[in-house]
Amino acid sequence: MKSFFKTLSIALLSAIFSIYIYDQFFRTGETPERITETTRLIPTNYTFNTNGYAAESTDFTKAAEKTVNAVVHVKNTSTSKDNLPSFYHYFYGEEDLPERIGTGSGVIVSPDGYIITNYHVIENNSTIEITTNNNKTYTAKVIGTDPDTDIAVLKINADKKLPYIYFGNSDTTRIGEWVLAVGNPFNLNSTVTAGIISAKSRDLNKRDRKNESYIQTDAAVNRGNSGGALVNTNGELIGINTAISSMTGGYVGYSFAVPSNVARKIFEDIIEYGDVQRGLLGVMGQALDAQMAARFEVDETEGFYITDLEQGLGADLAGLKANDIIKSVDGIVINEFADLSGYLASKRPGEKVNVVFKRDGKEKSVSVRLEKINRAVFYYMEVRPLTDEQKKEYNTEHGLYISTMNNRRLYQRGIDNGYIILEVNGKKVSGLSDIKNVDKTDIEDLLFLSPSGEKKMVLMHY
Image 1 (cartoon, helix red, strand yellow):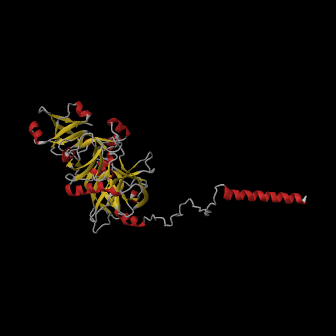
Image 2: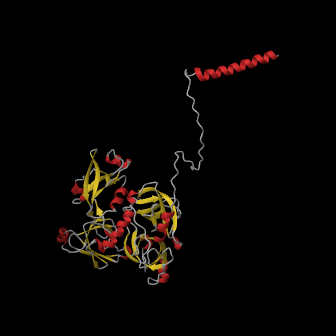
Image 3: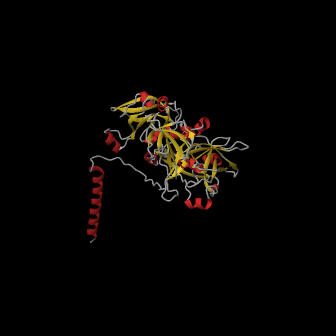
């Protein structure tokens, strides 16, 4: 029996030894290199850094310290009759309507008290009260507004220099960059939230004919933060918080800001000129995508496809043509219309921009001089100042030419393209500035001049 177990043990050891020898020396025909590796466990909180360098810190305290005292609370007291239920008018009368109070935020951008906020924050105001972060209150004066970009400029007078925020360059911001949203909602003193830039050149409504090109961020922004500051980690102003995308009215992950380059240009125009100076490239067309590319029979799916040009303006004079595709302007890549309109909104008439475009598959570049926008939309009509030829043709020295009629009510009364608006509420109009701040609800009568020389008064009743 002992000899049996002895023989079995020897056989098993021989088999194991034979398998080991075969595996190590005969399977590949050569002796392999022995590699010893120590398994490294990386925890899921990502605090372990495999490259040996410390992770980048995300300390926002310096940026917050630079900005919180320059963001203010804006209180708008209004007695406007707009959007009030009809029973208010019945019980109170037109002269004794109750006051309405709206609130928002604003950003001090100069030590002498100039403030940028949203137009919708101070719209229809009777009085505007500013409360700073140290709880001092001031009465603000409206210096100017631009409803198209939702920007308004206010001014307060203080007995000492005020803290303010420096403008940053919004064109150099990048998706994924850390940002802070600073607001003063509900007079709770300045509140800071952090997030990243999640998109650029956002157009929230492509059918409203407004040149929107917002910075999108996931920093929490709620009601009362409109007009507040969007700043980078250096504490520089890169945007004015304007809107949120929400089904409930509360923050759900998306907020939008007017780029600082646009806000700064609007601010400087209002201070220097009294109104906004917009530069016009002089092209008409459509941003490309797969659907538009198929429609226009082109291979490009990104860029701005030119369908027509305004004669005598910069693009036409520089040699651009219909069917050209604009790919970039001053190095800013044009992937959609908001890229083009957003960049041009930061430029003034008379400035030149370098346009890179494609024609017949070849890329070319040209310098284009921007011209002053010579048209405006008024009461659903596109109007333009009269040329010298039109003044002679219509025998009038004042008025605005209707180039496009989209007002169904006026059209039904016989007013069409080619008519001249002579007066609004009994006041003569000669330039676009004469109608800029006229609200449609304030229009009582309009005086028109037909191409045949007949004057026609239209009374507006609501």
